[in-house]
Length: 188
Image 1 (cartoon, rainbow, N blue to C red):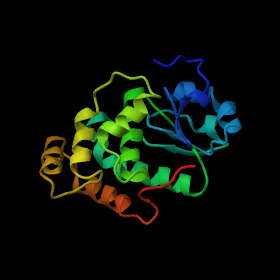
Image 2: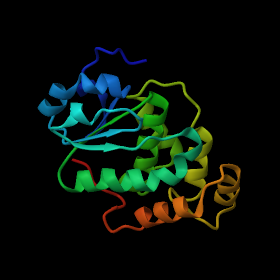
Image 3: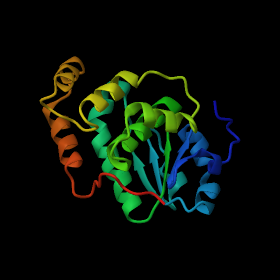
C-alpha cells in the first residue's frame, strides 16, 4: 500500500485525476495539491473535512459498499463538471473504493472502448490495492454498458438484493443523463 508520506504527484492516475489513500492523508497534502493545480477534492467518507479543503471545491459523498452503483452517475457528473471547467481532482477514501470510482469513471467518460479489465489495469498501475469488495459491482456496471440500465437483468437483481429505492434510482438516472456529464472527455 501507498506510504502515508508519498507525494501527491505520485498519485496521479490519469491527467487531472489524483487519489489519496484516505481523507486524513489528503488533509496533509493540501499544499501539494495547490502546487499541482488541483481545484477539486472529493471525500467518499463521513467526517468534518470541509475546513481542511477551504481553498478547493469540496464534495463529500459518503459511500457504502452496498450502495455504490446508484452513486456512480452522481459522482461522475461532479467529476465531469470539475474537469470541464479546467479543474483537476483528488479523490480520497480507502483505496479499494477510490479505485472503483476512478475505474467506473474511466469506463463511463474517458474512452469509448475502455473495458473493465483495461480500466482496472490502468488504475492498478497507480493504486496498489488488493480489495475485491467492488469487483462484482464493477462487473455489473460493465455489463450494463457503464451506465445504469433499469431494464438490464443484472440491475434488476442488484436493485432487489440491495433494496435500492426508486428515489435513489431516479436521482442516479437524472445525473446519468445530465448534459453536464460528458462522455469520452479527452484528457491532456
